[in-house]
Structures are given as structure tokens and as C-alpha cells.
Image (cartoon, rainbow, N blue to C red; front, top):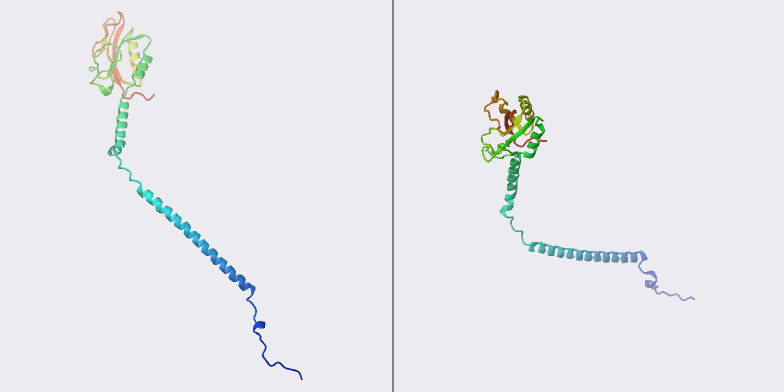
Length: 220
């Protein structure tokens, strides 16, 4: 007769096995991700803290800078004074007479048969005050209504008329008229007075022309 073992079999060691490999890999990956996130968080927190400290230090340095002093009152007055001076200079330049140009223009229109013996001129801006004599006698120009007078000698009244017509074309002169004219034989005269110059040689006609000097002159 065969012997039969009636005791139950021990399946505790035979039926159980270890955890599966994918589970182990997943757990390890989760631990690594958590460690990486923790490291990144700590590193970011450290950088943010350093930047906040630098910002606080910069703010303290800015606050330590003293406030600039108030601008002097004179600085606020300078623009107004500059404008006033520029306007005054422009006004003076507008009343300026270019005397060298005026004399050049007159010399260019003198006829060949006319000789000047006296020429006086005065700026309209100072008419009635101090006089400006270009050449000739030292008498005052206050009596001249136009501020420009020229005396000369010639051989005929036609030359006087020609010279007068040329002076009317000078840009720096205006309202030129015949003040006086006297022929060599003293038989004919015109104008308000016979103010002929005694410096002319015998046998020549004497004349006096007068007019105005333009303020600022011509643009050429």
C-alpha cells in the first residue's frame, strides 16, 4: 500500500514573486523628477534672493544721492535777456548805413565833366543829433533836411541835370533834388538859394544837390 501525504502543501514560497520591473523603473523615475524639481526650486530661490538683495542695495544707493540744488533765478532770466539783446541788435543793424558802399555808388555815377568839391552825409537814425561828415568842410549838417548834400563844379547845366538823374538811381539815396545852381556868368540860378561854392574855378558853373540817406541801404 502506498503512503499518502495528507498535509497541505506550503505555497507561500512558491506562489509569491518580486515586484515587476516597470514598477521599479517608474518609482525610480518619480524620485529623480522630484529631486530635480527640488534642486531647480532651490536654485531659483537662491537667484531671486540674490537679485532682491542687489535691488535693495541699488535702491539704498539711489536714496543716498543728495537732491540737486535749485537752479539760480538768473538762469531763468537769461532766455528773456538774450531775446531782448537780439532784438536790439537787429534794430541797430536795420538803422545802419554802409557808408563805404554809399560813397562807392556816388563815385560811380559822377559824370566825367563834373567835379565834386564838398560832400556831407548823415544817417537818418541820428538826424538832428551828432553829425557824420564824410569829407569837405566841418560845418554841421543839422540844417540839411535830407542828411545828404553834395556841391560841385561843371561846365553846363546839362551836366548838373545828368548828375542829378544818376544820383536818383543810387539805391542808398532817395528824394534827390537840386538845392541851388549858379552859372559861370551868374545870370541864371535855380533852387531855394544860390549857395554855389566859391572854390570852383572862374568860368565853371556851381551847383548843390541834396537828398535823403536810406536806413539800412540797398539789399545788394
